[in-house]
Length: 356
Ligand SMILES: [Zn+2]
Image (cartoon, rainbow, N blue to C red):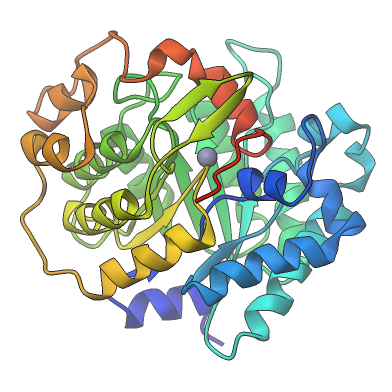
């Protein structure tokens, strides 16, 4: 039997991925400090409702509620012995909603960072990280995932451990990183370096998620596709606007119109899978679907076009767009929030409310 994800990729020009998990769960009653993954057992109907809202908005791919589902992240909630149970439940809930939709919807098993720093900089060995990702990946596969979706990564060591662990489950693998620091990941990787990992590892797709905002996202996709080749599939999953720290919580103020412009530019930039990250609601997603359906193809966006349509770019992203891949340091737009570490924590557990 053909894999559902690979089949859809082979038959469609582009696929719509879903929106945010964490920020939408906060709107459904999750409180700060709670592990969203525990809701797979405590409130499966709420997780199912979120998936359903994205499917009804037109999503072809939904990500399971398992971003923090490795034993290292679950340990923060004394749930490290429930890795299999929580991840299987995450995949099962998404599978039920996908199968009930009456069309082909892909269940992507979300796998986020362990929260630990890997050797040689940190204490966690690559072997231990790989084992933790393998444990999670196998549970997601057993619960019905079609593809394993490694996201919000920043270090080469950890993305490689995650890919190696995911491989044990025998499903296609997608890997996205967060280019939130002057056009690079927090651990300094560029989109071109991710393209090299994509090629070496034989990924089904690679790309960018979360990070700063839609303008940096589109630049990272241009840089990724420049470093790759036309056969490679790229993913764009941008936050809904630039995160702003207001009264102790992160807010995302992107309008549906902004996300619609972003979706079209991401497609022109070379992404074939487009969705939203933090702050993106089902309403934003529906507007993005309409924008993609009616999109008139344009040229690959350059820095001037991206800034005119979506807002300012970091110096690093602009340098990469002009072919200077070695540009170092300098603050990204919005980096004054010290959002790198905060956002990584908040990707699935912020208190942002996006009423739009
Ligand atoms: Zn995010």
